[in-house]
Length: 384
Image (cartoon, rainbow, N blue to C red; front, top):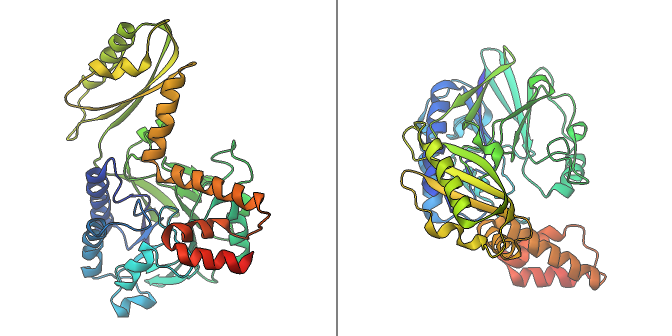
C-alpha cells in the first residue's frame, strides 16, 4: 500500500497566505495521483479558529479526495468519507468540549480523525492500522501517551502519527519526551510539527517538513513536499512540489558603517539573483552579525534597500544593539501566535503560583480564557 504523508500546510499563514494554499494544493494533487490513502500530520491550518475564507481553501483541497473512487477499504468509506486520515496539530488544538478544525472537517465528511481512534485500511489482503495523537503542549506529551496507552493492532502494518518536538530534535529544551517514550511495536512513526525534513530510526520515523516556509529559519531551505511510503517494500521517497525558493545567508561585520553593510547586502542579493529561481520570486533572509561602528544605527539599514524580483528579510543581530533587539522582540510577538500564547501562559502560571493555585492543565484554562472568559471564571471558581 502506498501512503502519502503531508504535514504543516499552515493554511491561512499571515505572511505567505497564497504560498501556503498553492503549495498545499500541489501536494494534495500529487498525493491523489500516487497514493492509496493520505495521512495529514497536523497544522493543516495556521489557526485554531480559521476564517471562513481559509476553511473554504481546505474544502477546495479535500473535495477532489472525497470525489475520488478509493480502492482501499476502511469502515468510514461506506459513509462517504475519503481515505484521508488526520490528527490536529498544535496550531489547531482547542480546549475540551470545543471543536477544533480537524473535527469540523470530519463532521463535513471530508476526512477521518484518527486522534486516539485507530482505523484499519485494507487492500489486496494487506492490512494497515493507522492511529495517532494530536498536538499537545510539550510538557504533557509523555503523560498523554501514558494515559492513552497506544498499542499496535495484530496482523497489521501499524502506523503511529504524532505532532510534537522531541529531545533528540531540540536538546537545548529541558523535559521533552524522547524517542524512547513513543509507543513501542509500531512499524512506522510519522511526525508533523518539525518544519525541516528528517529520517530517523533507519527510516522508521519520518518527518516530511512543512509545505511552506513559515519561520524563515536556516533549515527551511530544503525543498518542500511530502513523503510517499510503500508498506510492502518498507521504503519511502520524498515527492517535491514547486515552492517559493528560500535562501538563508549570514553576514558578519566588525565595527561596520552603514555603507559597508548595505554594499555587502547588495552584493549578496545580486549574487543570489544571478541563479534562476524558477516560477516564483525567491525569498531571501540575511542575518547580520558582529559589531557596528560608533554612531551607526542598525535601524537605518533598511532605509536604502529596495530590490525587485525577490522578497528580502533582514535579521539584525548586532552585538549590543539594544534598540534593534526590542524591535525584533515586538515584531516576533506580533507575527508569531505561538510566542504570544507562550507569553500569556507564562503570565498565567506566575499569577497562579502567586495565589497558590495548583491546576492540572493551566494551558486549557488559558485557552478557555481566550475563547470563553465566563466559562474560564466558572472553572477557576470550582477548582480553587
